[in-house]
Amino acid sequence: MIYHDPMAKERKNQPLPIGLSDFKKLRDDEYLYVDKSLFIQEVLEKGTMAALFMRPRRFGKTLNLSMLYYFFAKSDEDMSYLFKDLLIWKQESYRKLQGKFPVIFISLKDVKHSSLERTLQSFREVIAREYAQHPYLLQDGCLTPKECHLYERILNEDPDPALIESSLLWLSEWLSRYHKENAILLVDEYDAPMHKAYIHNFYAPFMEIFRTWMSKSFKDNRFMQRTVLTGVLRVAKESMFSGANNITVFSFVNDLFSDQFGFLESEVHELLELFNLSHLRAEIRHWYDGYRVGEDFGIYNPWSVLNCINNNGQMLPYWVNTGDIELMDRLIVTGSDEIKIDLETLMQKGFIEKIVREGVTFSMLTQDPHSLWVHAFVQWVRFHSLIAIT
Image (tube, rainbow, N blue to C red; front, side):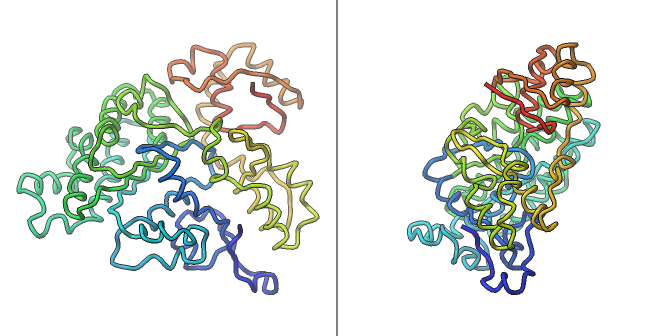
């Protein structure tokens, strides 16, 4: 279902949400919206207490988290108007949940630097900004004097690693105490800092802190109502999930939530009709529907589709410059002769077949020649040719 201005066909000036990830701005400024609001219902009914959603870049992950935030978060401003003409609002039981929970929403997308010191500083800044959203906790005797001191140290970006490690556990406890409701935690691009830490050779010391932060924040945190994380990479047991092993991963191979990220073919057809581009159905399918999630074939890349429509149907590889392929570059340069032969086959529009193991670890990336294709799979680097993954 596409939400749009009914006069858009005549005016042909309704903005497309290219690069826009703030749900409130999208709705307030009347951008065209492909309705994914039933993701809210599915998170509560089909998800788990802690869920990680893995999808390629530019697939709507941040926008979906932003939607969750505005739906659930308690606010002085009534945000229900953002949802009243969307599918979720038809569910009476869910209307009652709008604006009822304290929400912690952080993004780690910019916590990616070339040194451990700068990465930890950026991490502290992210946590401090979220603490700054809840100054009322320091009022009305909600916190003890010791807790107030901890709060102010985190707010002032005290460099003690122990403060980072316990920061979300404490904040969720204090929010739960104040609001008499457990908190919802949203973490966008959880894997961004770990990815850079590996590339720039400070993975081990960073993960010592990050793993503890993950464990304290997500594992058996009785002050959390739900936790939702998004990312591109799933890194297995040696790293983050050893301490937070209660997180359920919904990856490319899962059927659940397969229609909540990316565009379905029916949604693309509706978009093309709206912009008088229906004659491009076959061509746009050839260019942009090469994604399979679970048993759903023909999932389209939203970034590519929207840019194509915005450029009046010009078919270009819009997605290719939006991802970080630094690790891919390293694996290719240092890879075996077998990898180079495979790449040459692909560049000549050939066909290769590889086995993808979801349980990849970072140490495996440089030891197992097939790990390049695991990384290519999760990044969806297509090389304008066909990779068959079995």
